[in-house]
Length: 257
Image (cartoon, rainbow, N blue to C red):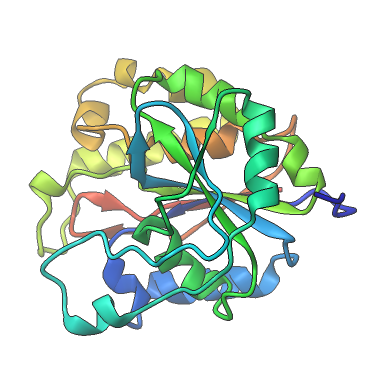
């Protein structure tokens, strides 16, 4: 891909419920505002919590399908689509940078990607490629893998991680009161990000009971490590949507650069 002329920012978006795609929510409105202020990318590389694999994969389809990877939601959500094109060129660039990423022709855009992009880039006119989360890799390996993608930022590619800092659906509740442990861990992550202490964020399992409850499985947490792995020295970080949903899902998002 040709150079884009400026370094693109990096995003981590707390995506929460897929209903954010079709309902008027404070999260969707925040993503819309963010999208209006972003430089237009040549393409988007998304690392979503909802594509796990054995081995790293990258989508190479020219017209990725909209995947409705959920159940029990209202009909309008299943009718929603995000018809953005893919980018085989970007997929090949990603594969070369990572060395062992396999080109994939089966996956499309799962809801961790398209629910957010419907707000960030509603015209669906920016090519989108997804990178899978290799279940066999440790958190540090994901962080180091992300750093190898840094040249993409200089080529006009927006890299977006999509997950949730705190994600415990087993303890989700309709009550407005957020669990103390969820607030504690979310604030700890914010402080460590601001301090640039990536080591503790990579080794989150040593952060105690609040971390254990916040991350029962780590597929929603790892996309944040991809964003942090791409952060340059002393690059600014901004937070948005510092709120919770369902008492145990942090909607914290961050913008690097």
